[in-house]
Length: 246
Image (cartoon, rainbow, N blue to C red; front, side, top):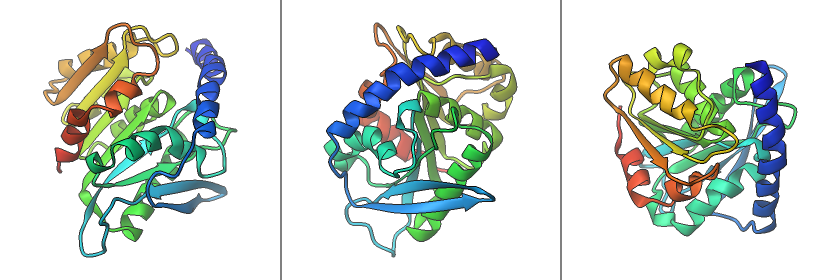
């Protein structure tokens, strides 16, 4: 297992860092972005909050927590907003919600442990400061962030109204039982060379064996690692996510 994780990390550096560099070159601001920082012990991470049009204090807003991929790590507080931010910018009316986007330092290689604790602290901070609705908290992420979605959701299954992991590494034996009652929509490209599609297939089967009836699975034939393009561009997907409530 350790050797596969190392191979995954090396491949991710080569491929996802290149994708992130391309995003940086084309970056333009999404919507109003507020930049914040959260601290836990000796660890701090920046995070950004995307503010929806018409935002006001008298209303409680749905909140998406987005976990970025390997190539968007850093400490500038901006790079992690560029990939998902493109979908927000192009489809602004489909996202009538807050989007909280924490950024992982380059010294870490996956969303787990203190990084997940900091991501949840950023979510809580954003909810308190920008009038989020705690009955409508959503979790999504791609690649390394998709793996983080599985870990966070398994540890906190009652926190989120729905979870949407994309092309993430999974641990079915450790996670499936905790996730059986949570609305989940999983996405993966059938031709993914970085995170084999078997991870999502095995997790979906494991959750269904546990009695889970709220899990959906979309697999894109011929699509590689970048399954986020067809997923986040699909208005039906975002509408489903934001329709879920606790």
